[in-house]
Amino acid sequence: MKFNPKKDLIYGIILLPLSFFLIAFSVLFPIYFDADVVSIIVITVLCLPLGVYFLWCWFGTSYWIVEDKLVIKQGPFRRSINIDQIEIVQKNTNPLVASTALSLESYVLQYKPYKTFIISPMNIEEFVNELRNTSGNHTIKFEKD
Image (tube, rainbow, N blue to C red; front, top):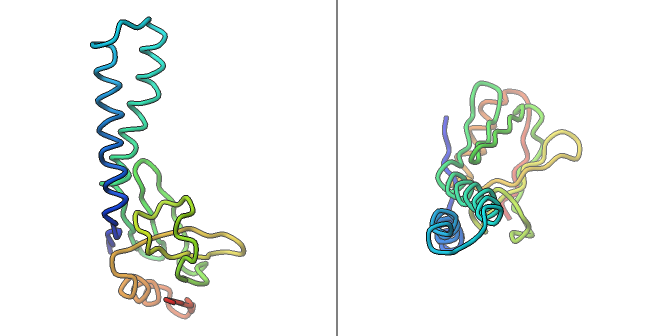
């Protein structure tokens, strides 16, 4: 089952223009500036992949529950977590920390001993209920507030 991420407007205002600027800058820099080959290569190698990565993260983030695993897709990256290893899903008390969540309302998924991942599914209650249904006898603690 697929769960889409919750996306805040502020993240969209930051990520989308920044990614379009980086892509446009890396493409237009060689045309409008009289730069040497090394500068063109460095700017293109740094800006173009970063802009594409931001777009890919914005449009390519999702959470999948497949059999007994939670698969988190964000851009080119994939992480698979066994659902029976998930211990707790709790509200993130520090939403400005660097994470893969696209919303300030994010949740910390704690799995295994001492491993965490920050997520922001659109409907957290439905997401946790599906995790609980899939986990069978394993109990997942959920702290919304």
